[in-house]
Image 1 (cartoon, rainbow, N blue to C red):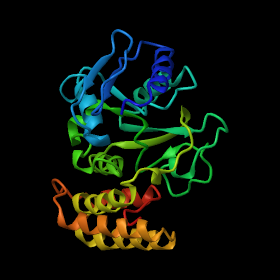
Image 2 (cartoon, rainbow, N blue to C red; image 1 turned 135 degrees about the vertical axis):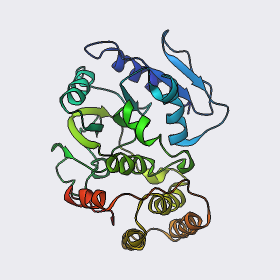
Image 3 (cartoon, rainbow, N blue to C red; image 1 turned 180 degrees about the vertical axis):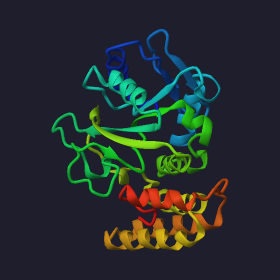
Length: 281
């Protein structure tokens, strides 16, 4: 967004220090001009903010159509930092060792305390962030994706703009037979934040939750999935304004186009269940 030039510079420095072959870099100005950047970095300045998935899709194309110039794509938030210099090599080794591995989700840790927020562990049993495991989704600001995943299932859903775009891609990848790993040894330092800091948070979380179900779930599971999340929202007792925005987004999710519907196979539903997160939560 163009408002973190110092953090972006630190992130780029941390990527440049990675062991092994140099990592090619693309920086997308999502509706904002880019600061001065080191030579050799691919840059794109968009005239308007396309949202998180739209901006990342543009970044993919910076490496050729569908990202085909490279084998693996890393997505890193501009206020993050790679504290370890072997992360790039760990990513290469992980993909080389498992041809079915399609996506890796990094561990996000606060640089001051080392704390990993529960919401940053992409599984239901999130009490131990140091435990690596197979998972059913991933973190958008700290991940690595095999380029062939995008070639097979398509990119992130531009329509979502913000929230749940990672789960949409994850479900499509799992339905195509790919695996997703959460790796606690691949770390991105990132300050502790609350997602509700974004003004559009409650509306888009609800809208995109409906879109996610409409696009990807067999129809019998749609009411179960959305009903579970409505109940969880009410249990969390948001403010009156937040609840109003949430229900407005929920209604919007049913009344607006959500993109193509490609319901997952029932065997994928069972696969998600065996991985510990059936697609009703």
